[in-house]
Amino acid sequence: MAIEPTPKPYRPRIPARLAYPLHAVLATNRVYRWLAAFVERQPRLYRWFTAGERITKERLFGCRMCGQCALPATGYACPMTCPKQLRNGPCGGVSADGSCEVDRTLRCVWLTAWDRAESASRGADLDLLQRPVDHRQWTRSSWLNYWQGRDEGLAITFSDADPYPPMRVR
Ligand code: SF4
Image (cartoon, rainbow, N blue to C red; front, side, top):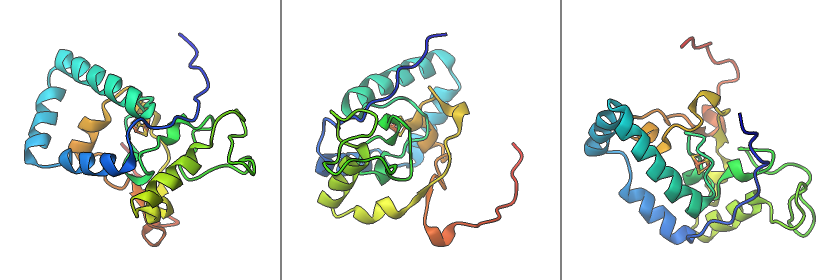
């Protein structure tokens, strides 16, 4: 199996002011839910759909196909391009000039996220808590997961956070 290279902070190719309205177009509705269920029933179609998603999101956001997309809560800067894959803000190694601890030639993706979210008056999104990554979802389609409602609870507020949630057995 090929070893994945260390992710590098990625600067999105579309401005935040365009990404937010684009997401509104893709927001879950009955048609998308039906489409997602239809695609998921057909393995070949699922592979094509996922390949299309990969190509699109890789170019635009540096997507690594974690299958549980955090973009709407991070100013559309992908947290999985952080070399440490931190989903709840930067580590303590960001330098004073904003560069990444792992690669000083690149800007910390969380600073990029902050700038983008702020530019769209969405800075409060970065206060949300992202739940831990479910590694079983890697390479799965995050669009289909989203339309199927599997992203519910992906990002929650501190007040929603239950320090002792009941254990859920899948
Ligand atoms: S699906 Fe995961 S890896 Fe892809 S853009 Fe969203 S958060 Fe990043």
